[in-house]
Image (cartoon, rainbow, N blue to C red; front, top):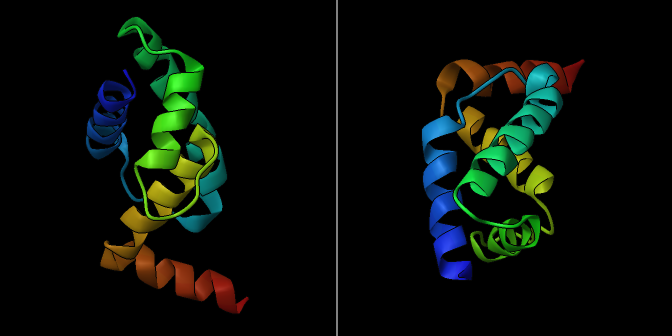
Length: 93
């Protein structure tokens, strides 16, 4: 089942994670984690399966959905010129 959970997580993340300003990422990661868990449950995946999928879906070490979503948001922002510039400005302050 973990391969199916991993596929679900990757597809869900691709469809739902969009760049947001750095100041909003913590709250957005929490929101995305909640919605993802709800939709995963509807598909028959447990929280444990989802957390396991997080640790298998990335080169980085993610032990739970929150850290996975935070990293996905950072990646989305880095790929978007508008938000990548915003991150640089916030780090300087």
